[in-house]
Image 1 (spheres, rainbow, N blue to C red):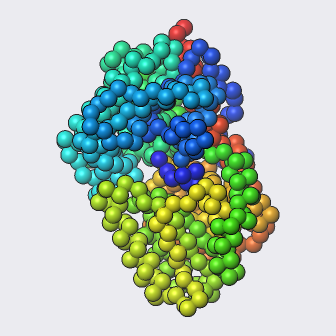
Image 2 (image 1 turned 120 degrees about the horizontal axis):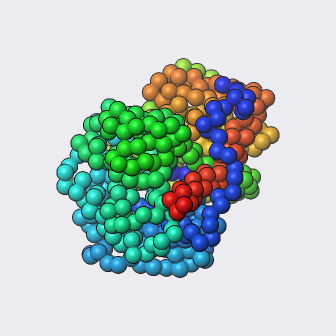
Image 3 (image 1 turned 90 degrees about the vertical axis):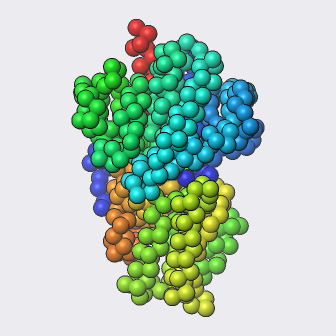
Length: 492
């Protein structure tokens, strides 16, 4: 899932595609139905300790509203397969399990993050398929299902999250679980021809069809899944978002994840004058700031972003000495070789560009390979003239939405957004770019820096209207509502 600050073409709003609109209705969860969340990781449960990430924030809000169980990996490497550790806190039950070293290497670092992650982000050249890691992936999913099943109640609603746990629903069915089970994919879903690179592609899609509801961020992802089911799996499109395949009928739907807009806006307003924000903007000596906040990942297009910025100061000489790019990229998955390589490449590129263009009182790129707290980040976002969100491919990218929400309404900055981010399906009032085209990105950067305030306000207001309509509560409530309706239908 995307890193957010929680860790971390002007068009009338009425012209936005209807498929991107999530009606705001009560979730209508029967009090006797408990919500069970299953994810790869479970957020911290200590009282007063904040959860990191948009998924954790949304999940906690759902569980606090309805009560329930959150099951997943504790983040710990253990010597054996111990029983789940159960913790009760504020009306929520947390059940966490450890992974032994082999399971971690094969399930998490291996198949999940060296096969599914690059493939789902359209980087097949980075896929390293090993049959042993497929077996590890299935073994952990089967173990999770076996450990979860005794904790379930007959009227539970089960909501499984993300690519790590695709086979979980099918295994739960094999164990006799007949409660409604939904799945939400936080990454893109690849086209049929990309997916077929995976030797076990058929089994993976069959596993997804064991769920009652499968949710995606965008219509593009949903169509890719539907195309595979109908053309390659012999399934049938029944209309109204229903597919029949592998002896089951499931619902597929678009649920674009959002953010807590008012929370981000309030935090940014308060953080704009914080000590760290003041230090940053004082150090710029009146120069404009472009900002990127991304997990250190090859899918984020960071190296191309650096080179696009280099193209900007080559092509638009007046920007030299007048604009600074600050890229915040906390390290992640540091035990995966591809992530070590991208870190070295970024350090080299930043050094080259700075060595080529820097003056004694100006450094073009500030590359920070570290984390910042939420308060500092939203303060940085608020004061930035341009927000750069240019991934090669992304499921949604909540940083794009957080950048918009963090802006000063009287003097908002401009979002430069990749057309391959899920957020581009909603935020079409951003400056949409092709991240593979350095000139396109550089031109958009220049346009953003020069954009008059009236146009900036108009674009910002358009995007804020969309953000408020499709906020994190709308995403959560719409999925839970669909899952509840499934439970009611099965019980009838």
